[in-house]
Structure formats: structure tokens, C-alpha cells
Amino acid sequence: MPSQRPKITVGELYHVFNRSVEGRTVFPTQKHYERFLAAMRFFNTTDAVTLREFFVSVKTGVQPLQKLDTKALVEVGAFILMPTHYHFLLRPLVEDGISLFMQKMGSGYTCFFNLKHGRTGPLFQGRYKVKHIDSDRYARHIQAYIPLNALDYIMPEWRESGIKDKRKAYKLLLEHPWSSFSSYIGENRFQGIIDQKFILDFFDGTKDFEQSMISWSAKD
Image (tube, rainbow, N blue to C red; front, side, top):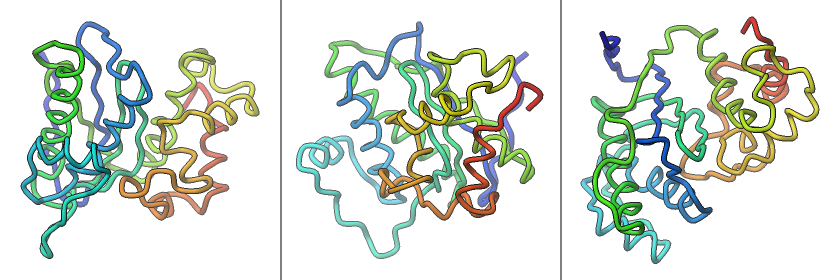
């Protein structure tokens, strides 16, 4: 029996994730990653926007003018994009913020992917999965866990035995181009997606955040 989805409450934190259908690589090139990030920026608004506007925006690099009373649907606290899946840490800012954001963004990227590759149908495995983050300790855990997925291909043992080579792990985390981690450590590469002040809700600054990442152990 599938697990019951949690009630989504404005202002709470949620771990949102999903995988591609049939293990398909959904980000085969840099352009695909960039288009997904563009969708994350473009559709995070209470404004009514269309797929046509999205494609025009991507082509021209110009975001549409937003109404004065527009709001973001969600705050993105962390994310990572992997070839076959993604993870987000989201805080809904309006009622149904997560569902609206995921629906609009997912439709926008799927439409782009299907047009480019001459296919039809869904790209991800049904409805996204979501877990409620119900404590500060859990929030710290997820904030670290999401970018640590970058280690899966080079240091897969981290999940079972923890991180042994911390220097190598830190280098891999910094070098992963499609993760929020490096933007919390240095320059924010994802303006319009994450706010560097987010981690201050759960960590005592950048150093505390870094230490939480590289000190991951199997018992965590």
C-alpha cells in the first residue's frame, strides 16, 4: 500500500523528489540541465504563464514582466539534478504552492524534452514524492543529504559506510555543476532559484554547513 502523502502547510519544509520513467536519462546534455533550471525560475510565480511564454523567455533570455501582486510559489532551500532524478527542499509560500510549482515546471520541461526528442508521454514516474521535514534536526539532515547525492557515482560507499575521504568528497561536492551546494559556499550561481540566507535558519553560518556535509557518517 502506498504511503499517505503529508498535508502541505504554507511555511513548512518538504523534501520533494522523483525519478525518470524506465531509468531514462532526462538530462543528457548541459542544455537540458540549463532548460530545467530555467523552468525552475520561470514557473515559480503565482502569475499565470504559458508554455509559449516559457519557450520565448528561454530563447530571448528575458523574463516576462510580473504583476505587482505576484508572489513566488515556493522557496527553494536546496536542490540537485542527477541524470535520472532530482531532489528539492521546498518551502511553500502560498496555498498549493508546491503542487502548482511542480505541475507547471514539470510540464514545461517535459514539453521541451518531448519536442526535442520526438517522444510523447510522461517523463517522470507519476506524481512526485514528498516528505514533511518536521524538525530542525531533520532539516539539517536533508540540507546535507540532497547535495551528497553528487557522490553516488564516484563514492557510492558513502551511503553505507559514511564519508571516509573528506577532502575528495568536498571537492566532488563543489564541482557538481547542478547542485545548490557550491552557491552556499561561494558565489550564488543560481540567482532567482536559491537565497544564500536560507541555510542560516538551520546552521551557524557557512562553516557549520560545510562541516555538516563532510562529517556525514553511516549512522546518519
